[in-house]
Length: 347
Image 1 (cartoon, helix red, strand yellow):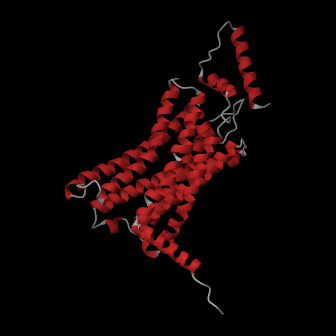
Image 2 (spheres, one colour):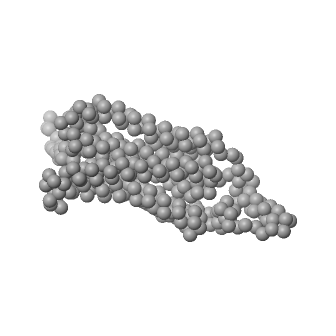
Image 3 (cartoon, rainbow, N blue to C red):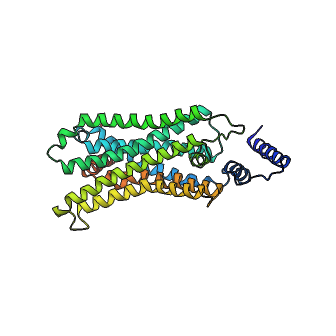
């Protein structure tokens, strides 16, 4: 029995039971309301336009991120600095996330169903790479915090060897948290008579709002962890500003410190604005201000536009701003140009 037939039969049986017991059917019940709207307007219709932002962002990232990673990991002097190692790890996480998410968006846009374990693996990789990029961004802020407040002890506190261990810890932490959530859901969830086989992240986000207590608890914990990272990052920036405002580096709005501060906050805004939008969507949906169709469109906008956009902008706004990286890239492209235009030696 397909999903639509299963849901139709379920609603019909519920209606008959309500008629037999001389009660009215409560159409405001979240699960029933969700199923009815799902039948009326399937979420796969007219959604292919949302494939454009992930594909464009992936192409923009592929054009520059591999070159930056090559410069970072091929140069010994650059590889010995903590900030470049953390930047490289952030760019690697963002590139992997864009690849996996674009693949997921294309499959769902074409209405292709993945096998269960392939879908679980894809969602797990998305969670790992997203958490890895977020945790590395927080580590980059902590690195700046230590470098400015403890300049004499900075090298002893965070040498390259310790930075590599920190990156390994970030990857392990990025895998542990999604793994724990998956195990909790696998143990607590029971088979439903009408399972919805989907591997779409936006739709899964909407479906969690109609889940049981375990699903909602995992959702709340995930949002809380993200807000904790946001609070930690902004707390470090506030302390940095209070500690350095008397040094004179903030006098001009075009000073390097002011531009760097503005650039960091722009990137952070792009990273955490999807989280705020998701919280707003959750509150509107729970309070029945918006329905399932609007919730899915909002989730698609958050996942396919707001989340992927900063991952494409980061290498251009942040990676190319480092003099060592931009100089190395210019040197590499100049050498390639010279090798292409140089005449072939005559025999």
